[in-house]
Length: 243
Image (cartoon, rainbow, N blue to C red; front, side, top):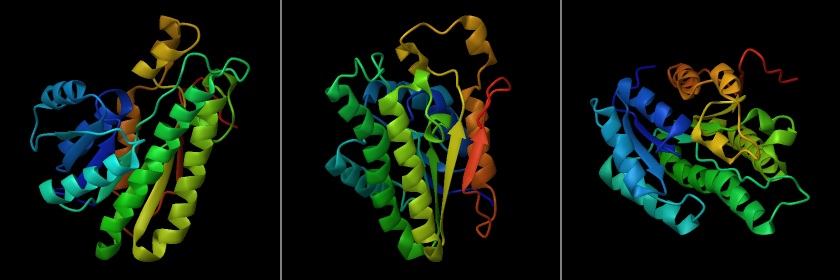
């Protein structure tokens, strides 16, 4: 499918996977809006692209439902109703084992990773249903298919929730022409690794997926014709098992 002039919104767009996805979609001709909390990082990220059409950005905490509603109102007025939503915003915390997990950290991880995806999905559906078409891509995690100790209980719970969110929305909304894909990356070399309890050795990071690898998966899904659905896509480094 030709993506020229499609309206795409990418959360978590100031760095890592989200930024790579935003750039990849823009290179295919999408009009892309990037969303994250830090306006200065967003500005720098947008300027780092320099292509046409340019990346635009909007500062928003996706864990804030009212802020998300304002975001989608801005998007409709600025670019038009959304065609492609990529839920890529995600956080983790350093003290993530259940025995030391602060309940406030649990709340924040769930709020951003799961609630944020729900708020954005809900708002996007309101703009997609009248057109009877749309694509929602959730950047979940391999930790959203099986619990992994190094990911931590809060992150795993949030990503399992995102998995269920995407699956249920896809079942309910396909009669409206709306497709939902959950992508489950294995370990990816992104800034979120800085929050691991112990530093990741350079040789391990060198073997990991790169953000551009996940962006390529998003393009693969987005460029398929509207009658084709990819409900789930697992992508891992060569060393990482997923079953």
